[in-house]
Amino acid sequence: MKVSIKDLSVSMELGNNGIELDVYDASGKKHLGDLRIGKATITWSKGKASVNVVQKSWAQLIEWFQSKR
Image (cartoon, rainbow, N blue to C red; front, side):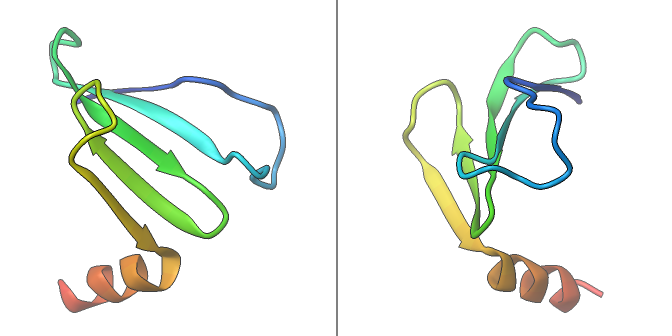
């Protein structure tokens, strides 16, 4: 898996726009999707378009992680 940051503002706290990561397969050739990490939500967009979007709150994500133990 190759993950790169689209726009990095050097700051310890997330700004209003958060950060967005490009996610590629291990070869770095196939774009799998975008992961946006914001103050209130985490959003996954499959592929290059903003379709197949899944958005979760931090509370929902933490609950999901804890249920996988």
